[in-house]
Picture 1 (cartoon, rainbow, N blue to C red):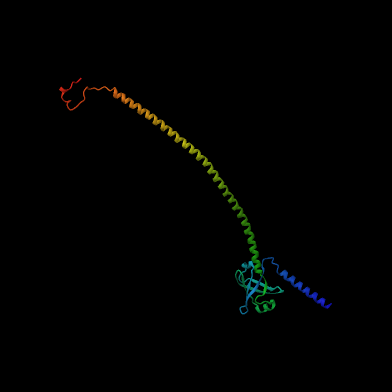
Picture 2: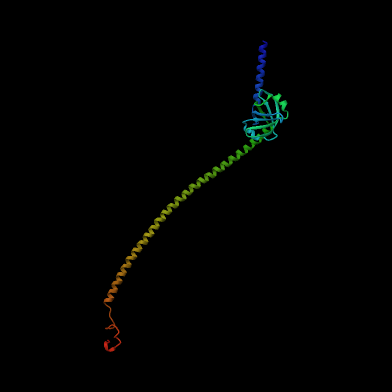
Length: 232
């Protein structure tokens, strides 16, 4: 009976620890994350943490970070951010030795982290994201409207091109017709010119045939002697 009671107490304690751990891992404000210690420097009281937490970009130098071991979620320590990269976080632990004993961590330990400063920064970022999403929605609607106008311009240009193509074809037909009329006028004028030329030649021929001379002799170098010709 005593053994059963002890087993029940152990199970209750385990369930309590698991429940506390589960509650502690809930990330309602985007400030809770996990990571593994990749390097420790006890003299400088520094710990380098390897993490895949995307919101690490919101952590700033001197931000407070609380950390704990999943096995002992109620035993926590506080550290300050000294630096960060995309994958690593450098923490300054002021009470380094006490935290090693309290949290039970060493190189390779898997820990949980939570930052109240990060929670505030994430809150501001979320508000900013909501504002930006609203602006993006409005800008997307504006872009779609302008895109529709541009598509309409293409259709309008096509309509203008078709209309002026019809006008061009009509004008070309009129142009060819005018040229044809001019060619006909030219042919008619040329025919009349030839007829007039022929009639003129005919008249000249008749004039030559019926011409009457005023002198019966042509003048030559002997014409100066009046004794050599008879004047009518």
